[in-house]
Amino acid sequence: AQSVTQPDIHITVSEGASLELRCNYSYGATPYLFWYVQSPGQGLQLLLKYFSGDTLVQGIKGFEAEFKRSQSSFNLRKPSVHWSDAAEYFCAVGSTGGGNKLTFGTGTQLKVEL
Amino acid sequence: GAGVSQSPSNKVTEKGKDVELRCDPISGHTALYWYRQSLGQGLEFLIYFQGNSAPDKSGLPSDRFSAERTGGSVSTLTIQRTQQEDSAVYLCASSFTGQGLAGYTFGSGTRLTVV
Image (tube, rainbow over all chains, first blue to last red; front, side, top):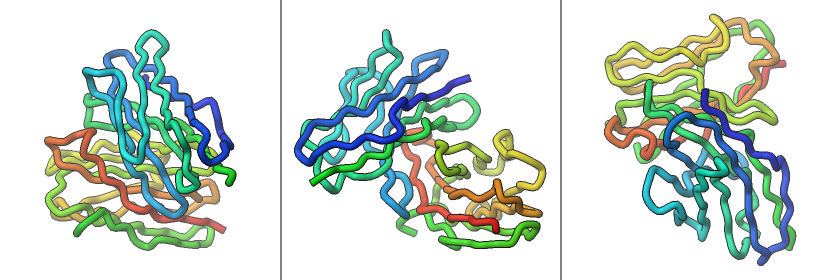
């Protein structure tokens, strides 16, 4: 069965600093990988996705992620964090078999210090 | 509509009561999903509807949970005899069949509190 691990429950960074959120997955085939962001009281917004091809994926709001098959990782990065990036971030792996279901990690809460 | 609409946004209910949560998907989206987000946990798949096919109920945690989708559009998730462990945010998502995983749009969720 597929699974996703986000080892960091909380991360605090200073505004303007770089950010890396970790995500490790377990999946038997080529994974479909996603990062979502959730602001308080909001639904999930897709930041970026990886299906195939270039392993460095660019997303919205200046985020990027790199798929590393050898490490089963899909870490999210941003060179310079803005205060508005404070939110909860979820990594997910998708399965096309049986209906395009997503399996999510437990999330990383990002706090940005001014 | 422009997005996935869920109602109510917040619901407080007494233990043992039944509740109904509603999801209005984006018009024309044939696939509809329910997920549950419990405190400190990730999102947990509950149920999936695709067109007129039988729903995939493999994620429903107990027989107190049920869902239906009328006319291929609006969906209602019903929880009978609510328990405190049912307290969570229930998220609905929809997509076009052809877009699959790439086309998920989530609603803002219903926060359910069982007291």
